[in-house]
Image (cartoon, rainbow, N blue to C red; front, side, top):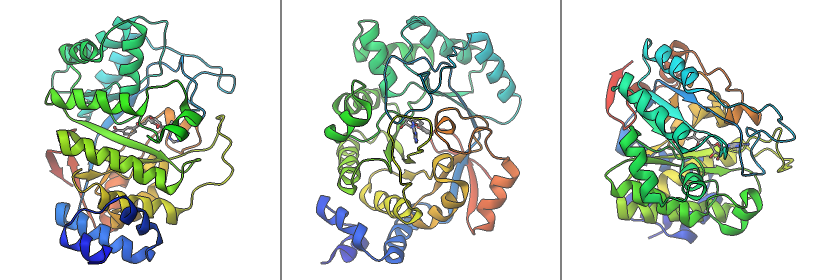
Length: 353
Ligand code: V47
């Protein structure tokens, strides 16, 4: 059986076969990924109405790709008061948002309570609002900073009302690349351990991959393989999110922007390799809306949402600071021949638009 036949038969492919897909004809690869997408989701494209909040940009870590944290290149430090965060949640609750996505930098000055009590405040005032918060990088930071185990931090997250974990901080698992782009941050093994512990509590999370910087194709496949192995054990990942590297205002100094062709190939390959992760998100913030729409034909079945406000990727050049208009977003999905389906944070369908 050749690799195409293997994929079509539903058999699992290995590392070398996955890597060889980059050499396949572009459209043939797209069709294979599309067949996988259609088998799972037909023509449905999911999105949700959510709001990102990034409460502080003060960070003890220095990741070379990051333009968000306050550094020499971005000296404007901020840390939000809980009241400011509550005002935002009140405002989005009065519209249709079902999820608040809270991710911060690793601020050593706020105390543990500042990080955790905001969740209880939100959950008490808005019990129906899904709280997706704290990346594994933040969990690791809080555990180290306050002398707690991962289990203790996870207990506190659950007690305070965190519903699911976002996929941030995964970057690239290959240790050599990781130590070049974000030395000192949560290690790959720790990132996976934290998600495994979270899944073992019966909770769901997402997983990202930052690509298009200094990593090689083999590093992306390695990243996918490590996700697939953990997912076999836990089944806790809802969604894979390949994040396209944004090159501005940071210290990584990548001169060439990854091509659309390479982005779409990577999406398609991830749909095929990650045969046990149900959803593939084309995060328009980093891929552009236009490419995310095309990615619907290369395996992607989720376009995230309207976002409204986004600070991490827009700091590095993404044109996402103020989100997109809901009607326009839905219209674009329809115009490209797909069915826009609003979902909640764990992929229950809310409304077919
Ligand atoms: O972990 C930082 C990335 C991530 C850059 O779980 C950059 O539903 C591109 O994880 N270029 C945070 N990316 C965002 C994130 C996320 C986004 C949307 C949905 C979900 C989810 C998670 O942003 C970080 C990092 O990998 N990032 N700098 C940059 N220059």
